[in-house]
Length: 259
Ligand code: NAP
Image (cartoon, rainbow, N blue to C red):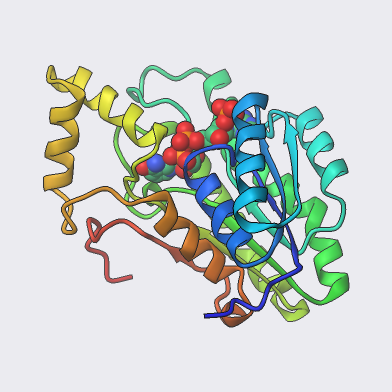
């Protein structure tokens, strides 16, 4: 399917690896020029070079911490006008409800709620003026099915979801859609670090933690960044203009929700 977005320009945050890279790759495959970002410059440059070579699109790489004001300013300055925004950042660490201080909550809110909101506030006006835009926020299945040990993530992402629910309806009339993608477990560094934490809690090795988790999924395996990226690219396509303010959950069927 032609996604109809060849020649558009996208900012994909936190995208040298994992789900962000999956989104960047699928958008590049659709002919979208990219601004990609991560803190570590080396992996970011490698990703940019690979994307250019594989897809022949323009790729600007900005090494910066997207959760800081200075980092966002650098990324936005390099990005200029963009048609497509994919927000993403690392997830907060797991723990116990009693572990977390006010500072821990502020850091989680900054990374996973206030950063995507600031990026939308910066880029939505241009999209609305031009009459077309797409925003996809990478959140988590924990929004709809909160995970006990991910209290920081549950809290921050719930706040972002509330913001998007209202804002998506306020901008839709200008040809701009905002949707959230809520990953279940995927085969990325983050997925592997969740296995390591589960293994430590249960006194087993990470491979066994993964085997048990895979067995608990209706599909019997973890999701891939390529599958996730293809879903993101579809939401950014011309075909998805009627999908507004949705929370779409690629989770291998694990959450049996009817709403
Ligand atoms: P990942 O494999 O650890 O990759 C994270 C990417 O984001 C890397 O490129 C990393 O590069 C970059 N990054 C992290 N923090 C950043 C920051 N502050 N500023 C700029 N770039 C940053 O993670 P993932 O699995 O793709 O997960 C992406 C998001 O989905 C996370 O918020 C995660 O919590 C959420 N999620 C993932 C899963 C899963 O199973 N994978 C499930 C539910 C939710 P640098 O480290 O060099 O900055």
